[in-house]
Amino acid sequence: MNTYYGDLCTKVYESDKSLARNKEVDFYLSFVKDKNMKVLEPMCGNGRMLIPFMLEGIHIDGFDLSEHMLKVCQMKARKLNLSPNVFTGKIENFKADQLYDLIIIPFGSFSLLSDELVADSLTNLKLALKEDGKILLTIVTKSDTINEIINWKETNRIQCDQEVIIEYRKVEFNKETSLLNST
Ligand SMILES: C[S@@+](CC[C@H](N)C(=O)[O-])C[C@H]1O[C@@H](n2cnc3c(N)ncnc32)[C@H](O)[C@@H]1O
Image 1 (tube, rainbow, N blue to C red):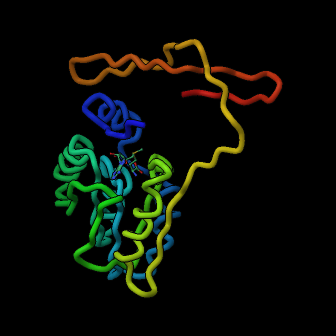
Image 2: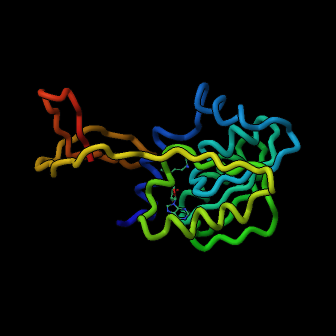
Image 3: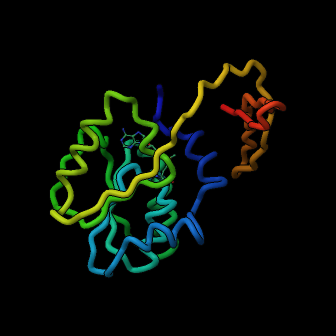
């Protein structure tokens, strides 16, 4: 599976997932018990969660595989007079040069990893934690097999600078289960 967020993918992500808000931010912030805690966000992408943490005055570092996503993160942060400490790296190869109180991976990002990368990635995170540190990650579970959906449908048009990005998805509504499957 290709999980690299290149130019187009970064633009689409940024167009509707620029900054996390409200309850989602509050949920992750609730694990920061004091402002001296050191937080790490692997797979931080465009800074959707990292920037709101910085705005709260929390020490947070981030890293990501995608230079495109990190560039957007830095540009957005600069507009808010913030200088994020973000760097390029793969979670499966990550070696920390300091220990953290809290490691967060929001938005099911950890589920992008293929099964064979999971054990090494979790070991690397554990090694980056202080003795009483915590890892907080959300995962996407799949309770059933998803049938291949045949038809592509236009689901969105995004005006992005001089470009229009047309989003196609394979969408299927199953009347019996009332489930909307999309890929
Ligand atoms: C869906 S985005 C989510 C970004 C961020 N976690 C959020 O909450 O918005 C997933 C991110 O994971 C990154 N990623 C995917 N595989 C990775 C890997 N092996 N190591 C580090 N980052 C990875 C992608 O580049 C992308 O920026």
